[in-house]
Length: 111
Length: 112
Image (cartoon, rainbow over all chains, first blue to last red; front, side, top):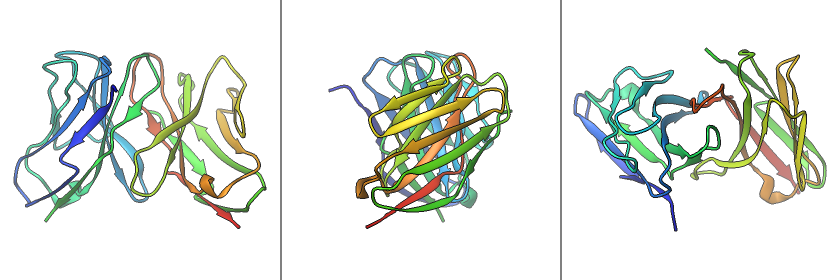
């Protein structure tokens, strides 16, 4: 069955390290998104992509980057991890202009 | 940018009663309003959505209403059941494939 997956599901890293979170979907969706979820803030948009080689900044993009080299994957990179980036990260994808479906999430802890 | 306010933050209702969660948005260009349900430790799941050309949409015990003039939309759950206990998020987005702007969530508690 088509699906959206994220890896790793849990990650502990140290301040200053580069971290990459993977997101892979097999729905052939053009649109992919990264959100972070924190208590008291709900979900906030980090970056999104409308297709291969397209990337756009969201509300909380500072300290994060993405690249889209194929339709299936949108990896999220934290260039130099900070404690403020401890969060749960969700990837999502959509085919049409609106309905988004979420991956299972990655819990990241930055010590 | 868009700003979405959601109330209440916690809602406790007796099993079998109705629950209503309300959201307001700021950007009049927003035209898509989904609701997500998230159980503890799980991913958000789309439960219902509405577009700006529709005033109301219903799916079994769940309904959503939209007032474009007032820029608010609401989720209505009737005949609540224990499995309705979760955190519910409203969201809004503009045209195209823009990302969603979420409210901060409502923790719905169904009392037996």
